[in-house]
Structures are given as structure tokens and as C-alpha cells.
Length: 279
Image (cartoon, rainbow, N blue to C red; front, side, top):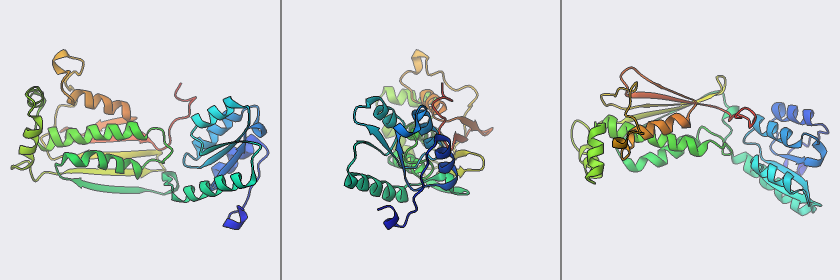
């Protein structure tokens, strides 16, 4: 069935051989029998998926091997198949995996990617733009997609609110307390000098450096990023500015501001760290 779809078939009998094959040959799909790569089956599976995060891996487990199935799911495999397996079932899963693999974006296989967006001061654009940036920079199987999306949402919100619309920390706190923040933001978004300002967002995939970089530049007056408001201060609990920046710091590996404070560079490793590296 695999050969009929125009694919070659490679067979590995050792765990180390499997990892090398995945790193060098870029297979379209992978079928792994957990019983064949003992005693380090889970560790080998993790290495394989770290080498190719977008690779659809199909895992075969014994019918009563619940722990193997659980560990496979935790590591983000495409499908877990229990033995004994019918031929038509195997054909379905392999065909589905190969078709899905052809549609997935693997940023590590390109030389470089750069994309620039210009955003008007429209709050309805923030979430879809953040999601679009993540979709075009991180693999669909990357476990960090949600945290990066949330971090970008916070940074884009700050660029519009505090940057382009010039709503400072005290103004926002007062507006939130008085329940007129939305009206204030909408009013400024349609008045000079704020209405013509844009947010420039650049995303870069840099495989040679091993990073994904997002740069957000607004046309405001900047802020003192060295001493932001303390989000733990009881007076600031209703404000999002300090907490948003704190959330962004947890979403990315590196954050840098320009001197003025109206441009921020956000970086994250192209590939997520392995479970052993995060311990």
C-alpha cells in the first residue's frame, strides 16, 4: 500500500538506527512497534519526535500495554494502534498519516522565512493575527503554540492600547474602574493623532540560528520597560498592563525592548526542549 502511493519503505531494527534515519531521511510517516525498541522505547520515541516535531508517528502497542499507550499519547503521536492489527486498519492509519504529513508546515525544513503585517488599531484583529503568526512559524504538533499565542495577544494589545492609542497605565486603571475603557479606546482609534498609527509585526523563522523571532513595533511614545508597574501591587490588580508583560515573559525564551520602549523583540527556540531538558 505504501509503495502504491509512490513512497519507499525503510525498515529499522535498532533504536539508534531509527533515530538516525528520522534525522537524515525525513520520512513522510513513521510506524513504531514499542515492543521492538525495548528497553528504551519511550525515550527513543521522544528523541524521534524532537528531531521531527511534525512527523506523524504511528505506534503499535500490545493490547494490554496501557502504560505504553499512555506514554505514546503524552508524546504527541499521530495514532496508537493495538495489536493484533487488521491490514485494512493499518492501511487507513498510514494513508491518513501520509496525507496529513503533506499538509503540515515544518519550519525547520526551510532556509528562512520572514513575514510582515501592518495592523490598524482594531482590537478584533489581535487574536486572529496572533493565531496566524503561530500557524506560520510553529509546527502543528508544537506543545508551546497556546502559550506563544497568549503571549503575542498580550504584546499586540499593549502595542495598540498603550502605544498607538497612548492610554497610559493610570488612564487604563481609571477607565476600567469606571467601565468606560472600551469607549475610550474606540474614541482614540478614530481621532488624530492616534487614528493613523499602525502596529508593524514581523515574524521570522531562522533555522540556522534555531529560533523563531517576532518583532512588534508601535508608533507611540514608548514606555519605561526597565521599571513596569508591579502587577502584585493591590492597586494594580485590575490592570492588565503589568500582568500582560509578565505573561509574555513566561511565553518566550527571550524578550528585548529598544531604548524608546515602542519596539519589542520576542524569541523562542525553533524546537521545544525535550522533557529531560525541562526538568
